[in-house]
Image 1 (spheres, rainbow, N blue to C red):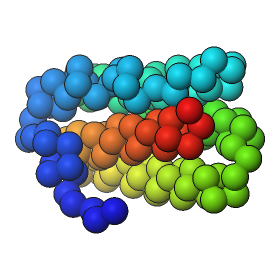
Image 2: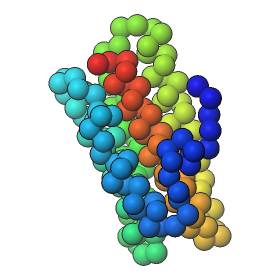
Image 3: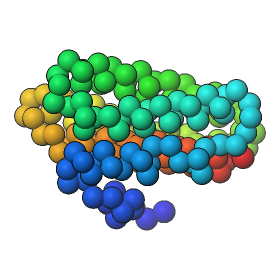
Image 4: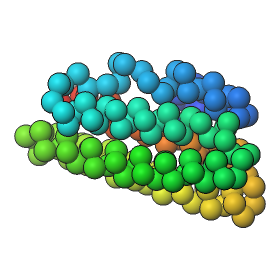
Length: 156
């Protein structure tokens, strides 16, 4: 697939905390993205993906309260780890090596954006670039949606 800028792909404007906050309603818990399979692994995957997006969407409201924001960062780190564990769990249900490879590729992309988010946070604490944190959070939400779509496409 050709890649475009995030704003173009998702048709979002991330120029303010309010814009980032407003995107949470349209991105955070879209039922169309969730895998319909009833096995526990898939339901847990859906819950973990939704939870990560929910925590990321709180950033605009919490970024100015250092203690709260640090707690949120810890929640995000834990949610990322749990989502990656859930991806590994659902991948065991995919018999086709080709389909499994598609999910692995999406997982690698997600990890890349998770690392970028982490680096953006480090820069934020050095230089206070709030806008960069908002954009990075939206990218991570977008990547989470991509993983959800991939799981749905490869497993439903």
